[in-house]
Image 1 (cartoon, rainbow, N blue to C red):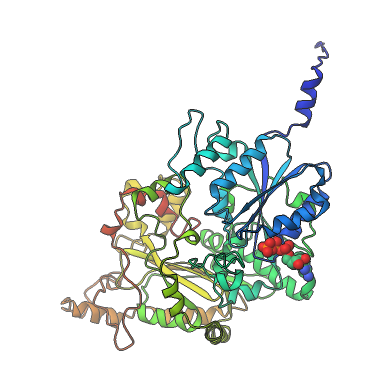
Image 2 (image 1 turned 90 degrees about the vertical axis):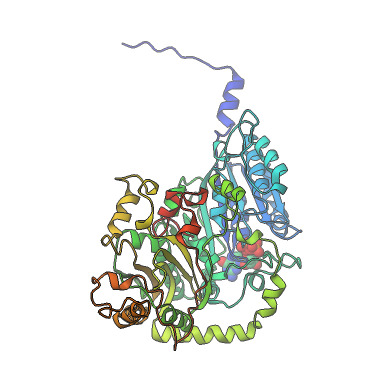
Length: 565
Ligand SMILES: Nc1nc2c(ncn2[C@@H]2O[C@H](COP(=O)(O)OP(=O)(O)OP(=O)(O)O)[C@@H](O)[C@H]2O)c(=O)[nH]1
């Protein structure tokens, strides 16, 4: 028989070990639009936390932290909970290092069972999540290259707060991303013609959260918050009928099938659904958007309840740029970016990317804002334009909530187009080189899932992976009409032959070309009489400098298969 000897520890060991929470402390990140119910949820968490010690970090972009005052105004902070206010900036851009510092300091107090961060309405949870794994410094006091020059002090302060840890997640781990959605405002926010300042108020004027230089659309921001969530609270259900709530719930399930969607009134939810759930993992949440799952699983169509459906449009014929633009412009507000991201502009920013942090668009300087605003029609006019486009869309195609993927434009054979639509706004810009043109050693490892997906897309040595692949998620969508409309945008054999003939390649009117080859080298494609090529120039393969800092294989493997926000 094995002997057993009872050992006792000195009393101080018991107290320390029994009460000090083990690092890393779980962090819940609350996102959601202005007025969705985040502060209401936060107050509820504090009121119902019982024995749990919860620290809160509240971010208000304005100089006066209204939310902090609201929380402080309740009796909820009576139990030694701590409230940290981060104001005059946004935790996903200008206050990133302040956030790391605040969380690290709270975690190192070793008295909290959980930390809850309430972000401002305009912040993107993905940008906050990235901060947990950014290397800020190490025990030797070395600092990583991170942040803009002006933020070096912030970086060293944050690094110091980590007390020797390299990354925040060594002391505090992101545990749950909760997005609160206002059920009554969801559809309106997706289709609003308002810009962020009109929707959220202006930080500059001190009446809201948005930065006047911020060109993100309201619908795209909402979509990012919904897609990057483990738990979605569908709040304010008291303001809609059951059927309306069910329809929004079905939409959210389609947009993010991995998230748990919980209908709430006044953000009333069992705390175990939002605290210490253990649900967050970066890979899982990046993989969770409905469009990506649809694309990955190679699903063609899927029908759900409440008229929600999704399908993928696939084709190996390029679009005629003018016809495509005209079709899009009839049904959406079209934004044509020259490049999907502009973070590759200089070496320093490349370095930041490699550290896992990129400059976000809403901290851009505000140069040119006035000019842009001067050119913008007044809201009533934009409202009218949107109503016309939406009514045409609903009548011809149904309600398209979200579509995403990439496109092949005739006369741009080397570079894919990246298509991202949320509600009213559709963005189409350069999506990087086709995978088939990437040097072999820059592709993901052979045998990996990413590599298999790329190989699956290669349609032969000429066409390679050039194709249209677009996932549509919507309500009462007329899939046949969408497919027919997109097919009409494709370049015809006659147009291609004429284009080749115009380039002096007219021996047989193009007929000597193999079936797949007539789709390529259409630089002389005729745009008139229907118009000029409306798409701005995209960088060429040479300009992209595939082997440069910005062109690593993994990054581009993300094209179409990664998160692609
Ligand atoms: N009718 C109704 N009102 C709600 C509900 N939840 C919150 N509210 C109210 O909506 C308003 C905004 O709620 P908040 O919790 O402050 O929203 P928030 O997301 O924190 O908003 P910001 O802090 O401004 O970004 C408050 O007046 C709440 O009382 C709900 O479920 N139904």
